[in-house]
Every structure is written in C-alpha cells, then in structure tokens.
Image (cartoon, rainbow, N blue to C red; front, side, top):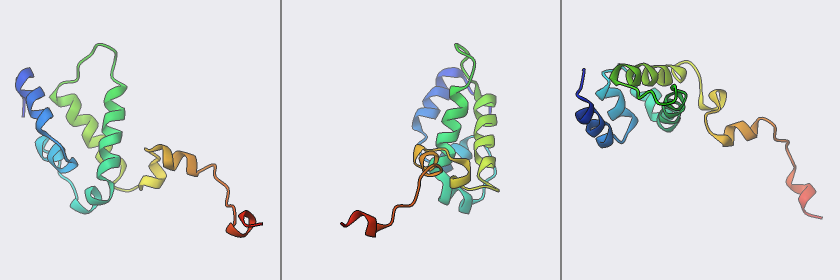
Length: 104
C-alpha cells in the first residue's frame, strides 16, 4: 500500500492500536497474540524504528518490515522472555524477600 509522504504521515497519526497498525500495514495476525502483547509489540516496533540510521526517514516498506518483525517476536515467545519493558529487565536480577523478614 504505497503512500504519498504527507498522506502516509497523516495516516500514521490516526493509528492508535496495535490492531490498527497491523491492519494498515496489511500484516496477518493472530488476535490472541495481539490481545496479550499489544503494548509490547508497539514498544518493540518503536525500538526497531529508533535504531534506523540517523537522518533516514523510514518509508512504508521499512515501517511494515519492522512492525512485522515486532509482531513475530511475540508469536512464539512471551513478554517475560522478550523483556521489552524495564519491569521485566529488572525482575531478572531480583531476589525473593519473604514478608516475615520485614516484620520484626
């Protein structure tokens, strides 16, 4: 779905959910995967786009590629395994502290 630059940017500004992004970029998806991981998929998509070469503005094909990759990351994996958000990154190094040790 090739787009003119202004129209493409306007279209992107109107998208708000993971489902809308996936539909706009014509990416087949499993609703169950998206329901569980929608924020993780969008954050991973954002992270991929942020790694673009400085000054290089992604086009429709690049956006579609990165979104498809972000979605695929969660098809056979989980949010805990992918560690997109800091809460999962911090949890890996955490230790268990029993409640009884806090009440003296």
